[in-house]
Image 1 (tube, rainbow, N blue to C red):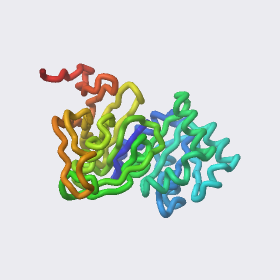
Image 2: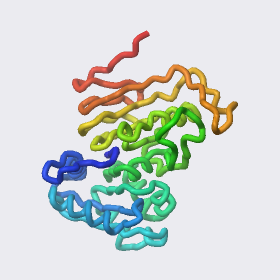
Image 3: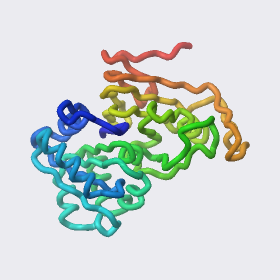
Length: 270
C-alpha cells in the first residue's frame, strides 16, 4: 500500500510519489483503477489522475465512476478490478468513500486481492485516511487535547490498528492524534505531511518517501483519563512516545520501533 499525506507532486514535470506508486503496480505494465468517490466531483478527479498516470506511463487506466453504492456492483468494473495491478483513491471526504464503497462487490474484491498480495492500493488525503481501521472523519486543527477535537468512524480496514491523519504539519494536527490514542491505546497514530507518503507492508513495516516527515505516535501510554472526563474537558495522556521520520527511514510494525535508512533498529533508551 502507498498512503499519501495529500498535495503530492505539485510540479507535474518533477513527480516522485505517483511514479513510485506506478512502479509498485508494475511500471509500464501497470493497470490502475482510479476511484474518485471521495470527491464531490469524482469524474473530474478520476480524469485528473488518469492523465497523470498516463503521463508517467502505464498500460491502462480505468475510471471507477462510483457515485452510488449500486455502481460498485457493475460487472465491467469488477472485471477491471480483478485484472488491475493497482487501485488509487483520490482525496475528498473519507466518509463519502467508506459509506459508498465498503461492503459493495467492488470493495470486497479490492480487499480480497489486497490481502492475497495480488493488488497494490494507494490513496491520498481522504483516500489515505480511509485505508486505516480507525478513521478520522473530522475535528479541530486548533486548541488543546479534548474529546470534542475529533470524530472517528470505521475505515476500510486495509491497515489494521492504525489511524492516519494527513496534511499533518501544514494543518497542525498533533492534538487530534493525541485524542485518538488517548481513547484507543492499542492504535498506532500516524501523521503524514503533504507531498509525503509511506510504503506499507501491513504487519511488517513501512518506509517514508517524499519531502516531508511522518509522525508516529505510540498509543501505549501509561495513563489516560478519557473515560472520566467530558467531551470539552482536557484529556490527561502520559508518557507519549513520538517519532519523526524523514524519507528513507522505516518503522517496524512488529517491534514498534523506527529503523535507520541502513536498516538498523533504533533501540529505546532504558
